[in-house]
Image (cartoon, rainbow, N blue to C red; front, side):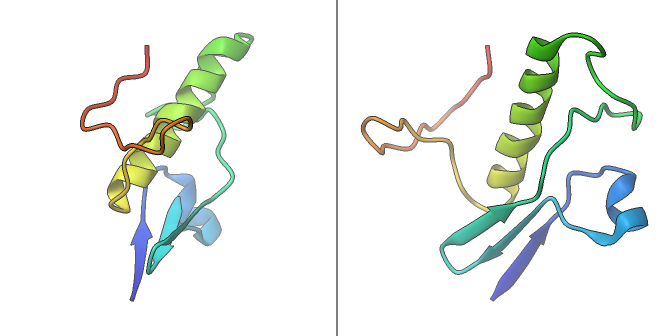
Length: 84
C-alpha cells in the first residue's frame, strides 16, 4: 500500500509532488529546500539555519510516514527526538 506524506508546503500542489512516499518498508523523501512556513526561504544567508530547516522538514516527513529517527551507530530508534 502506498502512503503519500505532505509537509503542507504551498509548492506541493502547485508543482505536484509529495514530501515523502512510503511503500511497504521503503520511504522516499523528495528533494528538500529550506522553505519556511510562509513559503519563502528560511534563514537567508545562514547555511546552519537552512540546513536545520531542511532536517526539520525531513524528520517531520519521516514521522508522517511512520518512521522515527535512529542512531546510525546502533540502529535503535529514538522515542523522542529534538533537533538542537
